[in-house]
Image (cartoon, helix red, strand yellow):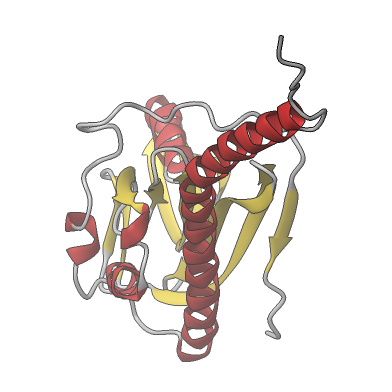
Length: 248
């Protein structure tokens, strides 16, 4: 009978080699996912810095914006000027990395002077609803004219606009929501994350300025031809919000 036996380390060596091979396959599979996640985060960070510098220049120049904002039949703000703006971003942990969860860009356009609108008492609620829906600031008082009570709205001639970038790291897309950018309404577009580059940002600023609407044609409406955003990779709800702190 043979007395040859495997050395005591051979089994462990075999298991070690097999586990290293499996671990290597897992690392190789995860690497593209992590690289994609970090690349989207880098693109968004570059977009944040690019837009922040653009806003700083616009605040100095205060250009006239070639848009006409109509609040129904109540009032129209035509060719306002770019007054000011700021950006903020929020981060959260995902898959072991601290990545951008969203970017928000708020800015204000101003007209020449407040607008006064007088309406019958029966129309007050409708006008108030319209102004609130457009996020227009106003003061309200009542007057009496020939025995009839009328409502008087003094409306600030200013447009407050917002642009929000929200990435979906799993689907590698970025949803861009715009409110009051070229009119009093909201629209959301879904971009491939790879499209968030300087040419697209240039088109966005041109849209803000009323020079061209190319940005609106760069991507389909959010939710068209694709499933809505899936839940992100589970992580603790820990956020960090930061905003620009540029000298005014």
